[in-house]
Length: 141
Image (cartoon, rainbow, N blue to C red; front, side):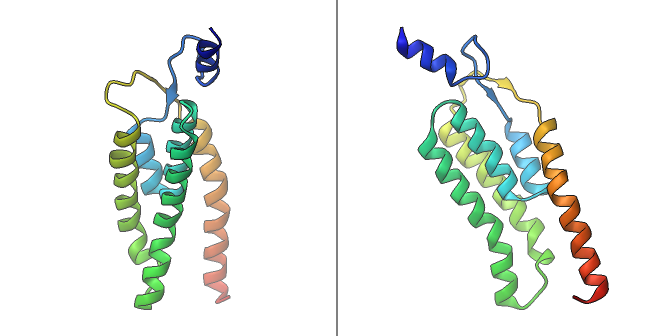
């Protein structure tokens, strides 16, 4: 009986069905924001079903995938934006196809989690950073 209670506490709904961000949401956040944002969504999915160790692994991978374009740009002495979209697409595919499929089986029944809250948070983080980057570029800072 106690095991069932814990299982229910690890899900968003009392019916025992977890709420997950979909593969499309993870891929979209990875492309439009960065692999870090997509990784955070997948990490929340894994935490929802009690896979804490795997969630940490996904977060570490998404941080590495986010840093890669900066490292490549530094090595090639080019602008970061040249590699960002490509690495975001690759990162999104790794997170949504590989890790999602690795840790969440195709038979897993889940409800789709709405993306509005993470979308708002992502915009509140990226818009000021973008404005600041544009301002600095114009002022040659």
